[in-house]
Image (cartoon, rainbow, N blue to C red; front, side, top):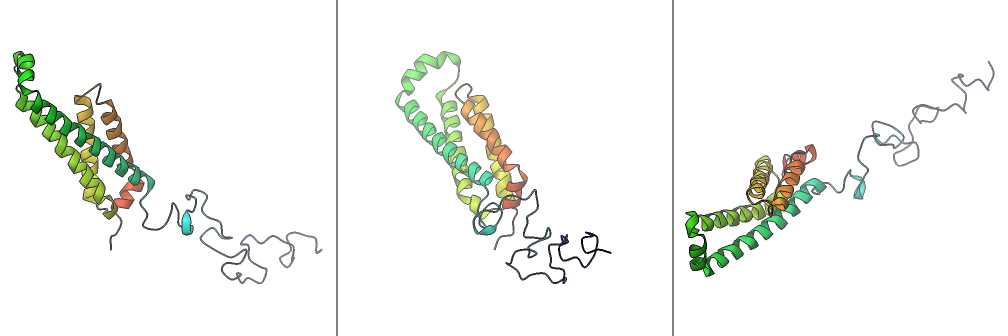
Length: 192
């Protein structure tokens, strides 16, 4: 048996598959070759997300995931714009009600229906903003409410095409973001 034989168990130049010194004792934590997880050698799982700030995957613990934060921003923006447009429409209809009755009176649709629609749009916008404010707290019911709000946003977009195309797209994006496993984990996490 020669010392250059790589299969010799006592060969000091042989690569240790567990990245430990030949003595069998692992080096202290924080030292090169230390065992820092199930994959040894300080390596992360090949499919794990890259570590974010402070070494946690995706960011600090308790930080809102990007998908949830993106949908939250869409809720704020869509809700704010929808509330603004609804209030503008209500004021415009109130100022021009007599002219609208003369112009569109033959259609058989009273202005009360328009007011009802605009008030519904305004309430929907307010609910969206309230949901967005509560996103950091989490909760499975909140996620479901967000998906339902987004579905109603899609319906509003369909009802108001071609102008509602933006609402249609934003609603679909929110449904996709809130339906992801990452979002489900965020909303269903244990709260303290």
